Amino acid sequence: MSDRKKVRIHHFGEMKARGEKIAMLTAYDTPTARLFDAGGADILLVGDSLGDNILGYESTVPLTVDEMIPFVRAVSRGSEHAFVVADLPFGSYEVSPEQAVESSIRMMKLGSPNAVKFEGGRRIARQVKAVTDAGIPFMGHLGFTPQSENALGGRRIQGRGDGAYDDMLADAVALQEAGAFAVVLEMVVAPVAQEISAALDIPTIGIGAGPNTDGQVLVWLDMAGVGDWHPSFSKTFGEVGALMTHAASSYVAEVKGGTFPAAEHTFDE
Ligand code: KIV
Image (cartoon, rainbow, N blue to C red; front, side):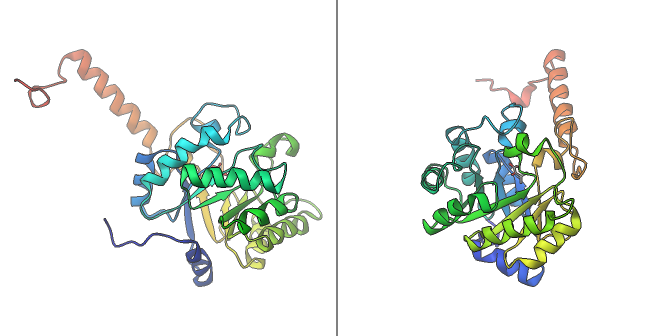
């Protein structure tokens, strides 16, 4: 147990006000959540990136609420200090405010996160209002929204071209007015992300949106060097993938060479 206090929803506005950056990472299981919690992450996001990063789907689209719940529960159990946010996957909130509230309540009851997140701006503002009116903290997600990858024409940088800033700002303001406590800006050109961050009262959390958002988020496998493809906006902060392969090959070599288990790993009687 450390002296660090549990991060709570009111802390994010305070952090924005004093210019302290919010550090968010994805996590999908208890041991990883414990490690990142100990590393000081403010927010752990059980993103629907679970679908393509952990479950081997082609995209986030096939994932369901029921598939996500055990992973959310695992991260909630592993997080002592960090605020846990759970994504609602594609198809679980778009139809109506009622659908969004039902999916959010199910996620909160069975996964025990501190908040939910889903994608979109003005088009889902009624859903956001209904969810926050139900007493559930909500984080928004604008810019490149992977669940709409097909409609957006692929993984394209957002915020370019005439009217793009005004459009994104209108979406961000709609989320803020509907009660969102923060908004993720994904793959947004840096000047637009900066202006939106300055215009909002709530914090923005960037991923591929430059340095001038109120916080940053990365998919943990990208930042830890696991897997063989990483987006250009990410950075490898540790070669965890190479270390795991090394550990596995050392184990295999010792098993095959008969040096593991040794006397100290053996119960004689
Ligand atoms: O699903 C996810 O991991 C996300 C982050 C990329 C923001 O939404």
